[in-house]
Length: 299
Image (cartoon, rainbow, N blue to C red; front, side, top):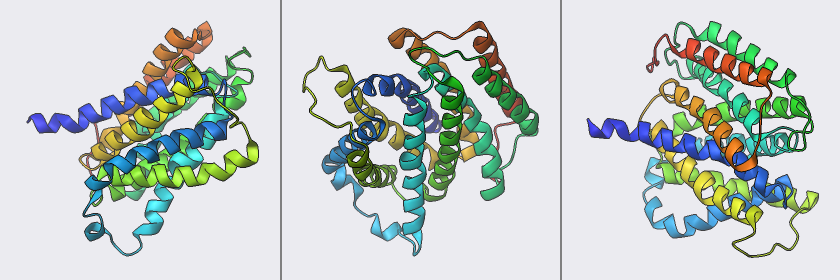
């Protein structure tokens, strides 16, 4: 009985870490370009796997012909394309608003999982999608330009594109997780991500000399993103997807906006307008409607 809680606990911890990542990226972007920040976090995660390599024995016996492109697609979806659009989004919108856009992800995952994985779709999913999308549009329309969110409408749209890639990652992970250890899938993501962002960083710049100090918040933010998010959160999520269906895992993604709002408010002093608070409530109501018909089982 206790072991049944392990995947759920792993999911909750992953959502807490992902919710905090929006504020951490805001700190990192104070000193780094988006591509330099992404390369840094993936390089840190990749370095950690040098210590964890002995735990990845036995991967070859699980490999099936043709899996190489599935593994590559997994990493291209996330971190590569997801991080490109999310980092870009966070230069335009606030961490709190970006986190609320992520509330769309459970609904998208459930819809795509129904089509590709034949998992059961909660009966109230479609009404929930309509309400949630309306809330997300309202959230963006009610935004106002601030120092932390100079172009909130564009930023929220970019975050929505990132969410689409994150949905593709979840489906890919669900297909691969039963065969491969979670740490192996996370290592593939980290290594491919580092190789992907290195040339982009060199082209775009933004990776000059950085002071190596515990007082350097942007540098600490990159280290946090690499160890706790790019390694920790993804390993936890990949582990959970090896135990439960994508539709079962999806509802807990709704914790990300909650934690992003809290962390953004506490650490960045971000505030939403009254209209955005109302829109955020509408987003969460739509999510609750979409999930209230049942948690979904593999079909």
